[in-house]
Length: 492
Ligand code: ADP
Ligand code: MG
Image (tube, rainbow, N blue to C red; front, side, top):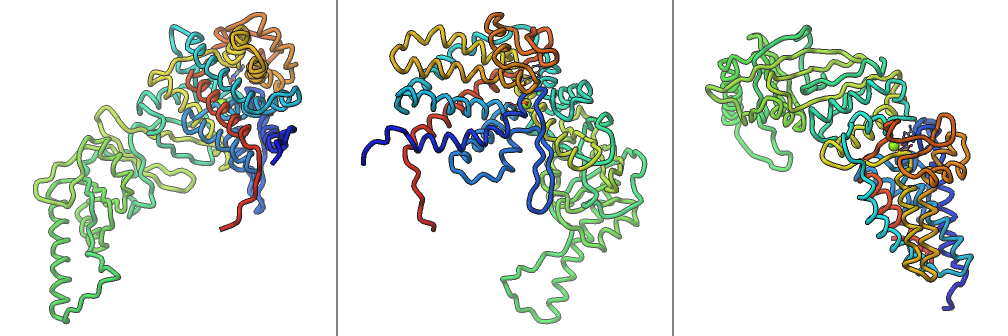
C-alpha cells in the first residue's frame, strides 16, 4: 500500500470532529448560548452543558464518538470543563490540518503535541493562585451563564454549605421538585425518604420528635422460591405457615417493646403486621431502598438491626412530612451533627429543573474539588493563555518541524479565551492579543469587551479542571491523528 500523502483518513476524521465541536463551541463561557435538542418523540432538552449536548447528539461518526468520550471523561473526573476540553480538542485537530498542508506528517504533529503537553503540564503548577481559596467564587464561576445565574449568590452559598455538610460532591443527594422558585431551594441536613415507600397517610403532618428503629430485613412470610417445589401435606403446611406468622408477631412485639414510634424496614412488611403496629401507634415505613437505609444508619450513627430482637436501642429523630408537587416525602434527621444532607431544588418546570440540576452538579463538583485540596487558577481562559505564552517561549528548545506543532498547540490553547470572548459578541483576536500583552491575571471582559482582572472579578477554577481538559483533549487528538485508515467492520 502506498502512503497517503494527503492524510485523507485524518482529514475525514477532523471534518467530523469539527462539525460536532461546532455545535458545542457557542455554549462556552458566561455568555454562551443554550441548545435546544429535540428527539423523534418530540421530547425537548434545553441545555448549556457540553457533555449533555454531546451525549444527546446523534452522531454516528466514530471520530465524533471519540470526542463525546472526552466530554464524558472530563465530567467524570472534574464535573465541569466539558465544553472547554472539547473545544480544545477540536482546535488541536483543526490546527493539525493546517500542519498537514505545510507538509508535516501526522506522527510529527503528534510528537510535537505530546511534547507541548508535557511542557504545559510542567508549567501549570507555577500558575496556581496563592492565598484565600474562596469556594463561593469557584461556585460562581461554574454557574455564570447557566440558568442558575438568576439566583447566583443563593446557589453559590448553597453549594458551599452542601459540600461543607457532606464532604464530597459524589455524596450529595438531590431532591428536585418542579413548581417553585429556585430561590426557595434549600439544604436539608438529614435524609429524605420518598412517600412511595411510606405505607400510610395521616401521620407526621407536623414536625414530630420520635423514637425510631431501623430493621435491615423484612417482616413478612418467607417467599417461596419459584424454582424449588417443596411437597408438604396440608397439616404440616398450615403449621409451617403458623410458625412464620408467630415469628412475625414475635418480631412485632419486640418493636412495640422497644418504645419506637416509627420503624424503617428495608424489605416488605406484612399488612397484618402493619395493622398491628399501627393500632399501637407505631408508624411503619417499608421497602426502604438499601441506599436510603445506609444513609439513615449514617445519619443516626447506628447499625440497623438485622431482625427485631429483645431490648433494642432506639434513636431520637425529628420527622416531618413535606409535600412537593403532589408527592409526599418524609424528612428524617437526627440531633447529631448531621452527616447526611439532601439538596432540595425547585424550578418552574421539569425541563428547567433538569438544567438547574446539571448546573448544580458542575458547581458542587468544582467546590468539592477545591474543598478537598485542589489548587485554584484564574479562569476565563487566562490560564490557558498564560500556558500558551510560556509554551511559545520554550518552543525553540525543541526546534525542527516539531516546533511548528508546538506553536500550533499554543494557538489552540488560546482558542479558549478567544471563544469565550467571541461568544460574548467581542473580537476573539483582539481579546487574545490584549490578554497576551497584559498577561495573568487578565481575562476576557465579557460584559463590555476588552480585558479585565480575573482576580478582581473573582473568576477562579480548580487547577485539576484545566489539567484534565488539557490531558484529555491532547490524548484524543493524538489518538485520532494516529488513525490512517477507516475500515468498515463486519457486523457480528
Ligand atoms: P465548560 O463546560 O468548559 O465548563 P462553560 O460554558 O461552563 O464551559 O464555561 C466555562 C468558562 O467560562 C471557564 O473558562 C470559566 O473560567 C469562564 N468564565 C466563567 N465566568 C466568567 C466570567 N465572569 N468572565 C469570563 N470568563 C468566565
Ligand atoms: Mg462550566
